[in-house]
Structures are given as structure tokens and as C-alpha cells.
Length: 239
Image (cartoon, rainbow, N blue to C red; front, side, top):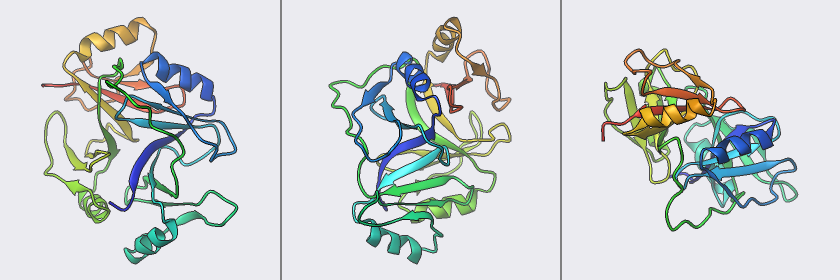
């Protein structure tokens, strides 16, 4: 891997509202540092680490830590990756950004911005089990090549419950979603009893959307929309 996964970063203009939303689902806060000069919080279920950033940024973004960033940047440039928004210096928080073939933003920072909580058991959330970060990708080959070059492993496309290709790593699983129903990335959660979980969310007045592939039964699958616009795909699992 070119770096260690840190968080999925999202712009949350009303950060207190977003924080309350995720905590109501069962996520817990992680202690954060002072890397950013604006409000910043991290919520986690022990698998997903979601960074809520109070200042405008490209969102959502996948953020990785690369301790010797200058050396890492040289490696990325040798791979033909075009860097953007590069910030290096003794008086700044060193970071760089680039994009994958689909336009997904990837951030690389030189140090951690929070401390992962120590869990005896992972928190149980209303969403179920976080399985992957879903990327809309009609063109599969460029995406597979790009992420495999960065150390991920791409698997064969699975047709059910919709066409998707898993691209896995030790700390973050991505998936390419080949469906016109997905127009932006989603955080995908799975559970055998998702129908019951959706019923609880509806009772609480949560905003659910049925903007999914037609192959998904809306009685036991849905998209939950967070206050800042992040989309959580809640899938009925077969296992």
C-alpha cells in the first residue's frame, strides 16, 4: 500500500448536526488533534472512520497517512499520478491530493489527525456492518488498474444484487458500482435483518431514499441521507 488508510473525509458545514446524527445511529467519537484550523470531528463504528470537516473541501475524499510524505510524493509522480492541492513546508500540515479515473478525490497527509478509540467490542450501529465504500464506475478497467497499482486487489465482478467489483485492502474495501442508479459514492452497510433496521429508522423520521438499482427491494434496502449529504447504502445481506 502507498499509505495507511485514515478516514473518509466529508464536508459537514453544520458539524454539530452531523455529529449528533451519527451518534444517534450508534457511532462514537474518536479523540482528534489540532491539525486543522476549523471544527473537525471523527466518528467510528470500529471499521469505518468518518472525518467531519467544518471547512469547505472536496467531499467525500479518501484520506491516507504517509509518514515520509515527500518521498511518497516522488513515488506517486513516478507512477504518473498528477498531484493537485499540494501543501509542503515546515510551518504547515503537509498534504497532497489527487484523483482516480472516476474523479474520486484521494488525500495523503503526513500524520494522523485523530486517535482510534480502543474497543473491547465494536459499537453496534443501527446501520449494520460497514462493508465497503461504493464508487460509481461505468468504466471498470481504468479503475482496476489505478487502484491495483496503489496496492489494492481487484476481484471479478459480481452480478448480484447488482453489478459490482470489489477492490480490497487490509484497512479499506472499495467497490465499483456499475449502475446508473448510483451517481455519487456511498458508504455501504449490510445486515440480515435490514428490514427491521429500516423500520426503526423510519420511526425516528430519518430521511430514506429509494434511488437504488431496480434489483434491490425497497422494503429491505434503502439509502439513508446524512445531514451533510453523505449517502449510506443499507443492504439486506444473504449471510
